[in-house]
Length: 238
Image (cartoon, rainbow, N blue to C red; front, side):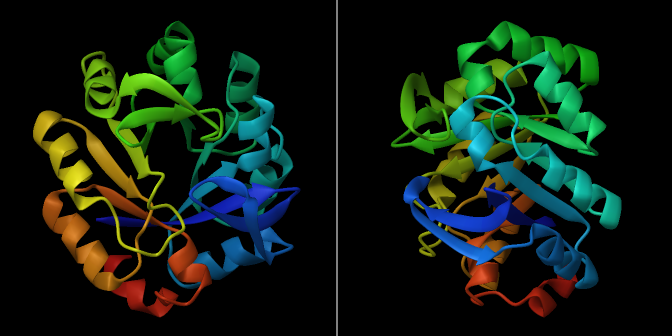
């Protein structure tokens, strides 16, 4: 199972939120490049980079941070947050992203998202399926849709999506463990996807359990920043 550390960006700084609530913002480092280099130095190969300003603004904002990290490290970055247009996508890939994650756009403008999948292929386009009480949340988690998580994922699996990041918002940043039941249901229903678990990962035993479930990767955020999981503990996964 791949381990993917996360960097969330607001105002160009590395932050974490709790349950996606912007008022809970905690700054961990003024310089995200330093954090990315630390991850790389510990043997990490991947990075989940989220433009939280972009998610609110509905267009890419912090692409300069993406550009700087890709130019100064060899991390393979999946980038998300506010990607709503062909131009946003062009900027993200031009700035060095290896993959992009589309969440809100897959709900609100499915034709556009399907077009990206056709143009760039299933190895470059990740479906963001973020769950709030079983419903897909959009717009930086500031609003809920009427779409149920599992049928939503199935609908895109049927047209070729391979990678899916699923975050249970109630778990995100709470350090209370991931949504194992939700992931188990998703993997039972959608056997051909590569599921990337996100939210609530707090311990190595969480990672082992996610691997046992069949998750292709796990994203770790606050547990790293709060020292619950040490980078050296992850060497066996890298």
